[in-house]
Amino acid sequence: MTPARASIPELTEEELDALKGYISPTVLRLVESGQNEYLGETRPLTVMFINLPDIRPSGALKDDQAIVATLQGSIFSRGGQINKLSVDEKGVSALVIFGLPPFVLEDVPLAAMEAARDVHQRMSQDDKRSKIGVTTGTVFCGLIGSDERKEFTVIGDSVNLAARLMQKSDYGILCDQPTWEGTETQFQYKALKPLRLKGKSEKV
Image (cartoon, rainbow, N blue to C red; front, side, top):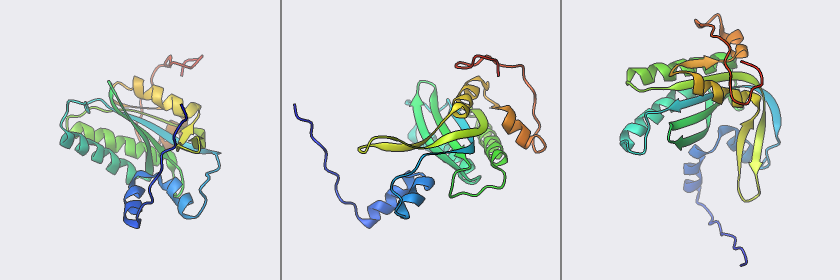
């Protein structure tokens, strides 16, 4: 059987404007400046994984939308970007990135931890649970995929560690040592025993 390529209709200016809300500000800035091919790079970032287990397929859409809107408000107000949202039997999980252009942050780890605190507090006020992992380190930023479909993402050990810390957070906030070192004077922390995490040969 011969494969067929789908035709993509031309979009109006109004339709294009409506789509901008679904595109990463980092990618949108490059596309609007004519740089359609984003060159991959490594850069220091703070990465956050958030799990919201109380969003379920059986839940009311209105309630779920309110939870996501709260999440967005806390993150966007601190200069963060939501890179991905995934849904599975454990609820909704979000990959959040701090330190990407066009946002200029004086203190990237601090902005991330402030956002993490805001999300956790606002969820608790609404009797909703949240699990959050935050890490700081150098990661790869760029496009993955093919000419037919590609997406902007971040890849690296720091990203994987944030996901593992989220899973172990026990409905709180866990961060790695570099994040703690960058924010220890602004927050109260409790040092925990080293954890055995999947994919790590040594305890973290």
